[in-house]
Image 1 (cartoon, rainbow, N blue to C red):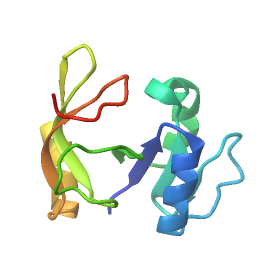
Image 2: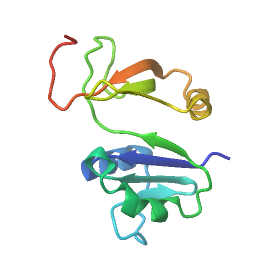
Image 3: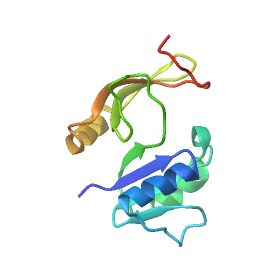
Amino acid sequence: MFRILILTAVELEARALARQLELPAITSLPFPAFGRGDVRLAPVGLRAALLPSRWPALLAGLDHPLVISAGVCGALAPDLRAGDLVLPESVIDPSAERLNVTPTAYARATALAPAARRGTLATSREVVATAG
């Protein structure tokens, strides 16, 4: 059985995703969180600033979960549409450092979502309008 922990940056993203996944609020936690069974969803702040304080409570009872970073973002690929799932093999951060996804975790994720888009995800601190 897969245990899944979905993390977003902000509460607005977490609430919107929880509605779509029909996950109820987890009222026993001291921060906004949603879930049912082996699925949990919570915001962890921009750049995961709140993750260290929230991690122990989120992980309780989820031994070795598949961790998914989810959120609302823009895309410069003209064939991407709202709601498309993107599973990057690596992420290039604003300082141009490449962060690779763990191969075994990536294989698990792509097995669960074979139609997801794959490739490299580039992040930016500013809003951009073109690939250049």
